[in-house]
Amino acid sequence: MNSSPANFRICVLASGSSGNCIYVESPTTALLIDAGISAREFHRRMDAAGLDPAKVQAVCVTHEHTDHVSGLRALARKLDLELYANSDTARAVRNGEGLGWNLFAAGSPFTIGDIELLAFPLPHDAYDPVGFILTHGDTRVGIATDLGMPTTVALDRLRGCHFVILEANHDVDLVRSSGRPWHLKQRILGRQGHLSNETAAELLADIAGDTLRDVLLAHLSSECNEPSRALNVVRRHLASRGLGHIQVHPTHAHRPTPVFYC
Image 1 (cartoon, rainbow, N blue to C red):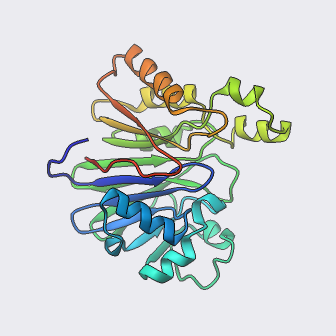
Image 2 (cartoon, rainbow, N blue to C red):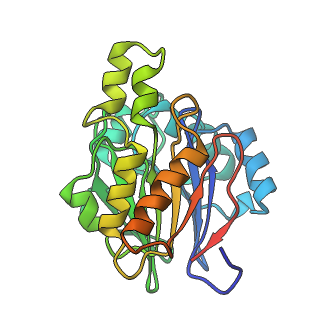
């Protein structure tokens, strides 16, 4: 993290099963990836991060699960936001009728202000879940927060990014030993569930290249993970691959991260 001139300012306002919302700002554009917190909580966290809610122009939705869209309608109304989703997600969002969606398709770039976005498919148990690559100038930011496994497409898209927000949801042994129902354990550990710490670490090492400098670990389970556990697994694996220079940071369910510059 630094305070020098940058193409992007990034703050994860919320990350986890209780709500997800990411703030991304370029020199002339500010948008959200998902809006899974209430309007009141959004304003509280923006204020805590020193960010101006009035700058936000749009929300891009990754998928229709409640923890990603619960605050969508209220925020869109209060801030007069443009809403972006693919067609299946727009149809699947609960109470999403009449929201005036701007539709995109995975693999076809689109722009919001001076930010170019490219959606790419992710394996998750939703109608048509996506991650995003955001580009301004020569800087690329990758976001993939709900996926059951790495895919060739996801790896290809995330390579060359300078800043990545990636799910590190759980410790496999903690999931297996938890008191959760068996069907929920199967869902979490399945190919359309969530990434483990170990798989996230392997994915990051595979896509790191010469450009990646900062990683935020997202969607950490409150029951089957701990920030220190996820950080240790990822940092150790990156160091073992000669990638110890990459800075790895946690996200939080109930408070914003610092503002990162890239």
